[in-house]
Image (cartoon, rainbow, N blue to C red; front, side, top):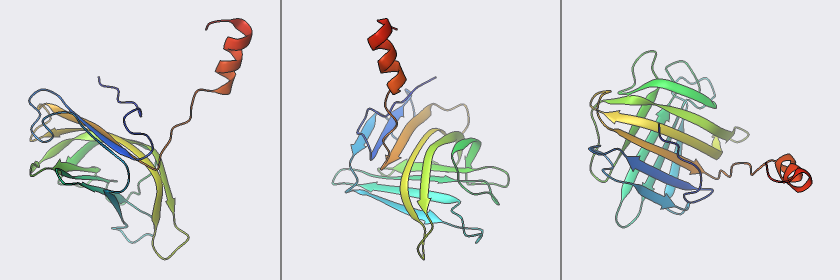
Length: 173
């Protein structure tokens, strides 16, 4: 089990971390800042609510695409999305992470949406903030994994004020 925390880059960042032998990222990569990141939102079933989000990152040395979609007939919302696939198939959410000229034909994995805030007040939906972590296996479920997290305008809550107050009055916790 890998735990990736939001200490790599802050509010808008991408962190990719490969297991040995993983074929897409092939290493640990982190990209920080919003200037080279674009976002596309999709409503593929025309119900007025987003069911797919794509993040596109590019700079002078790298380009990456990270796509996450709910199963057909469902909309994206915070929660766990197990059994994700590429290509997306009936009953499965979609997951597609590729870049720097490398990408799989088939993907097996999962993703978790911790935060997803979308403004629907205008003519097109606008992503306000998001935090999505994932595990992707290229080719087969038994292949080495690519783990990652994409944060967009997202800052997780800090330590609870109660914890600090308890330390101050009761000593070390």
